[in-house]
Image 1 (cartoon, rainbow, N blue to C red):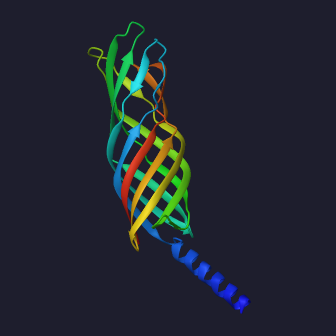
Image 2 (cartoon, rainbow, N blue to C red; image 1 turned 180 degrees about the vertical axis):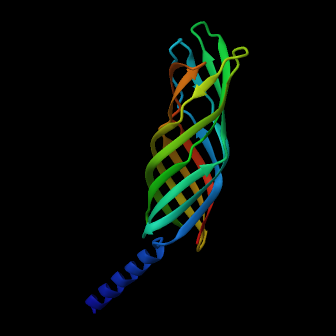
Image 3 (tube, rainbow, N blue to C red; image 1 turned 90 degrees about the vertical axis):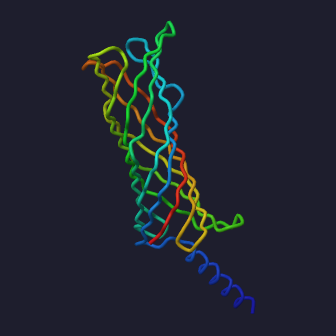
Amino acid sequence: MKLKSLVLATAAALTMTTAFAVPAGTWSVAAGAHYVDPKSDNGTLDNGLSVDVDGDVRPTISGEYFIANNVGIELLAAIPFHHDITLTDNAGNEIDAETQHLPPTLSVQYHFDGYDLPMNVKPFVGVGVNYTTFFKERIYLGNGNDLELDDSVGVAGHVGLDIPFAPTESFRIDARYMDIKTDASLNGTDIGEVDISPWVYGVAFVKQF
């Protein structure tokens, strides 16, 4: 009798685990918004100017394909983020600049089976690579001055939590770390590195197919 009870309990547990798992071959799409929060110290350029890059929030969308149970490959995309940049010299004088960027990020992610807290939430973690391209750079330093920021490639980490409210629909909260460092040049002359390396915080609606 005890053996039968143990077998039934084990079967029930396995059934629950399978029900919680995201099966291989599943697609999901997440639509929401993310806030890019650059690190506090963004570097000092060769001419002694300290760099401060502000944050920005924009709509985002990601698609994920599960290559195995609970294991997915995700691509994050967004409309261009805009950042105001403040350059400050040793005397406290400020020069304003700005840029836009796109940060597509490809990650491999593992989604844990559900946890009843009290609902069946599903945490996940991921790691991947970020490619950031900068454009529409501008520096307010009189006419004829051209600021350029090189494209950046770096590692990216991802943690999040899916809170389901329907069998194939969830509310997501997540955070990413992106290693974004870009070489800056003014009028074709290298002037140093800008280290943005932000945390990126987001919310999204997730739909599985």
